[in-house]
Amino acid sequence: MHGSRLPKRLRISQVQLIQALFKSTFIGKSSSVCVRVSYTGLSIGRVLVTVPKRVGSAVVRNRVKRRLRAAWCKLKRTVGYDYALIGNFKTSVIGFSQLLQELANAVDIALRQAQASLLSAGDV
Image 1 (cartoon, rainbow, N blue to C red):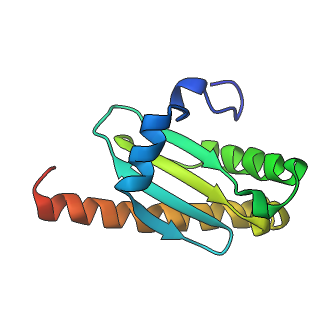
Image 2 (image 1 turned 120 degrees about the vertical axis):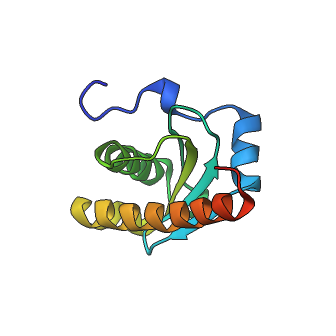
């Protein structure tokens, strides 16, 4: 990994994977980011970073995506899951340390839900 760049092999870009991620997911929310998590069982943790158009111009949306990718690279992630990080306008204006904290909390909430569901279903 070069600096804090997210390698392309860890990014979700195929339509089928994106649709599957949004169908069977667990959601964790904070005021600046929403995280969707889906169990894959793979030995890597892939991520999709998206920002809706209502957040602002392309410049603002790209800044939000860059900040989310940078924050994601700083987090310790659980492998075996696909993640969707959905930013909003607040993602572009809060401090980076606060973004890291809110992202970590949202990921923890979604992962707890996913792991509880897997345990109750007996999949893991």
